[in-house]
Image (tube, rainbow, N blue to C red; front, side, top):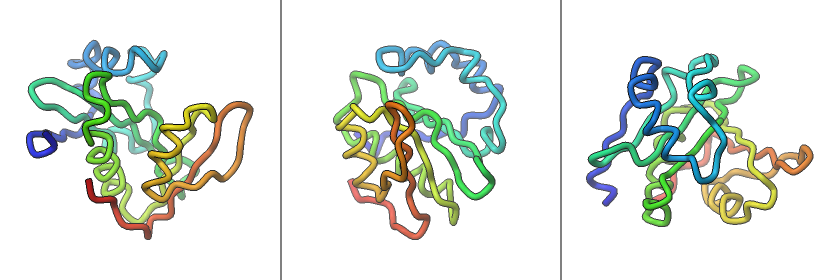
Length: 146
């Protein structure tokens, strides 16, 4: 399955063209809508990407945050494709795109599967903010094999 994945940078025009597909990918777990997806963020359109087979099955919204980190705002795999190593392939793309810059993200503290998944890639919990955990990954850690 991973061999047939197509990764494409998610620029503003492509986001507009595929907005319904993007919202659909995450509709069961996220309340992000077109406004959220199209919102401008520093370097967002250079870093963010989609993953597709014959249709978009996942996306990752990234931007620079606090100038010393690349932040993962949304990391979504469609419901029917979860558990098929798509997330691993996507996280490795995010790691490569962040280059020498640490990655950060915020995750629901009750989402044990997501916390465990991010931990596999070297993300560590840095602090808690209400029900969310802030996690950070040092840029020197290598990507993970599927």
